[in-house]
Length: 149
Image (cartoon, rainbow, N blue to C red; front, side, top):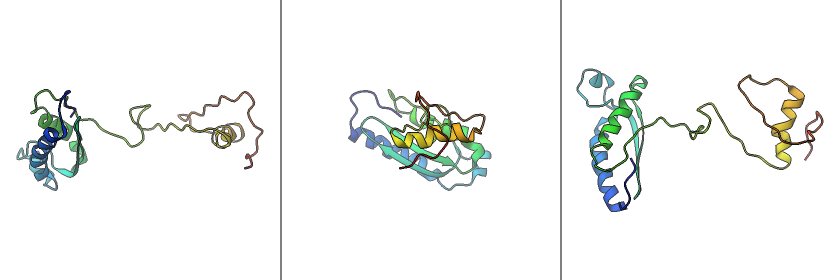
């Protein structure tokens, strides 16, 4: 949840306390309780709440993986109780950073290490997974031997 301009840490911390009080009781609850309609959103396996003057962030996982979308909808509902806030929930990935998808890793290397990672496997092995990409921009690729230190 992103705050509009002019919010401060004290205000956001107070909101975080309210959000925590609403969601923390869901941690460890029985997923069947949500299926029976006893809970407003799916129970959480864990919840990590972070707050700053500009935003409030929750990292959570539902007890039942099939409840991912309803969990995100529930968190967004809680966020929307606060006027003026930009409320949303999204699946995160430690790999993607919204740059190429969840199966993408961007590697930025330079110098001699560049030769090891970028040129040798492509020229010498020649076998890659069809979805992998090796980009090389050297006008003079090295011979097929592992570069020495």
